[in-house]
Image (tube, protein in one colour):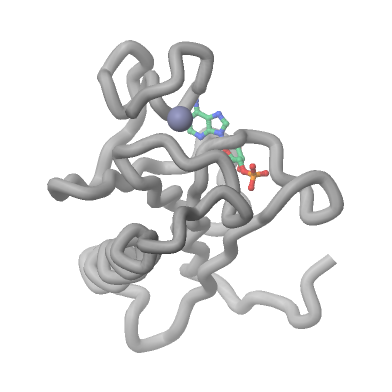
Length: 116
Ligand code: AMP
Ligand code: ZN
């Protein structure tokens, strides 16, 4: 389930500390160490999946649970009504740097579109 060399697996196991704001059976949410908005939380599945490309055919619950966590975190952060953005980067061209699937939840300011 967990990859020994994966940074976010180590956050799941508690070997690396993080500012955790949400926990469920399936995923956890913690504040990004280099926030790009007043609220910048990363939501990850507890199980190791490297990228969207690596989702198994039966992986719809993994993705669904990430969004349900994002919904709950946005409400708790008080940004649900004004609005927020969810982003999942996949591989090099999108700028993925940590290869454990994660959803960025960004809010608390007006966000430009299109993104860079
Ligand atoms: P991505 O570029 O989509 O792979 O996003 C990886 C994110 O992980 C970046 O926004 C980093 O700032 C963030 N990050 C890296 N290490 C940590 C950490 N130890 N705790 C919290 N966030 C981290
Ligand atoms: Zn991992």
